Image (cartoon, rainbow, N blue to C red; front, side):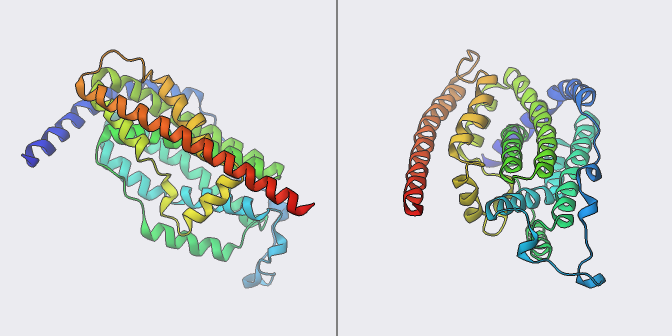
Length: 317
């Protein structure tokens, strides 16, 4: 029975990928007509660069950085997340296939994402924003672990990256503002623009998937919303870093609910669809219940954060 179920799942995946390929072609053409070429080196203040001790200069010191501890944490998490691109490429390749429009998009997406890591690392090293030795050791550690997708399901992976690309866009954009550095803000705004275009691509595919396999797509949306994790979750000290980022308002449960999950659910008309069967309806009900709980948790987090800030302000008087 299990073998039949798995086999049916693979066939449904293959059918969906085949049905969506013309939609991939249309959205790839759309993406290429909108995406603007940009050069990572243009966003790096090379004139600020200095040799490190290996070449006769001075190694990094904490006072070299213009970033506060929170901005450093967010920049490191953002960069390490981008660093794991080879693993992301492998997972997507295994899910979407290596031929046709899917493969063309996959390679284009990978090439665009690669610019993000290049530019972020160059900025941080040239400006001495973070300890480059610690950064390199963290990169080696994180990439040695790699990244494994939570599922082999094509529709779940498409749904996941729809949310993930928007979450990454918001994280990058808010990190840029938190740096209080006009150069970093400009760079991260540029990266966030890419992430938004990627989100739109995947989001449009899910819209079409709702017409092809409505119940399976609704189940995928439920599963990915309820089990969502950022791709950098495997980074050492990720939970502690995430708490720092959330407390600073760079990315927290309120943003996750209001600016990531809900806008996409509204775009897909998740709670308005009339083409669902029994399994789809059940998934939608479970999703609605989860979103209500998430909303409550987000409100509670914001209230607790405000109380902590008030206590800190009073203590500083």
